[in-house]
Image 1 (cartoon, helix red, strand yellow):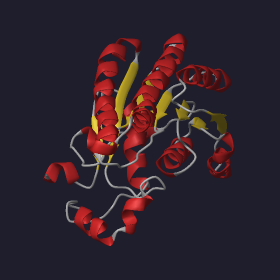
Image 2 (spheres, one colour; image 1 turned 135 degrees about the vertical axis):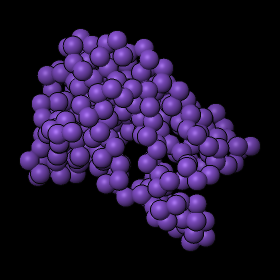
Image 3 (cartoon, one colour; image 1 turned 180 degrees about the horizontal axis):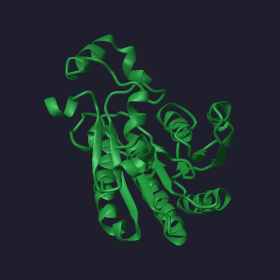
Length: 256
């Protein structure tokens, strides 16, 4: 297979939740592969670093304010980004929220914040992106950020696991429905990666040891471990892949 199948030159991509961590790394990787990238976050000023890093590497980036819980804004911002970019070929639904809490203590506000961000927001971003892709006749790729909790139950993470299990189901349903439009929908499921959102867990040495004991590769993920799978799913290298989720977890799911 020629390396050119991974080339994204001329493609237009949008990454939600791209101000830091996984979203920032994905946006940089797409730009490095040749894509022009639009990035979103709730605070547009928080995207300055991401855009600066992309542009310093010779890429092109545009920043937009977006809280994915606002479904009307999802449609408007993605339509605006597609207009500004001259079309849209790739969407990465990365924006997410997690907060652990015993299930007996979960209230409606927490449930809504997690599920509205991780599932409802992802759906309406995907819907808006698919409309833009279909209107231009683009061969589109939508990539959702699922989780290990899409597959296994994690105590104190019921709202998060519910949202990510739903996202896996949504990935499969949209893949089946939108294939006829030339739009592929897939996902990746990161394992244990240390980011700003998950940093609180890694301050507990006992937790770290217990997790590492469950990971066959005996290490936590690095952000660069995620960019290869994303580039695969975004590019023509995965032209016949639809409705699948790739766990990027050091072998965790295979060993339990």
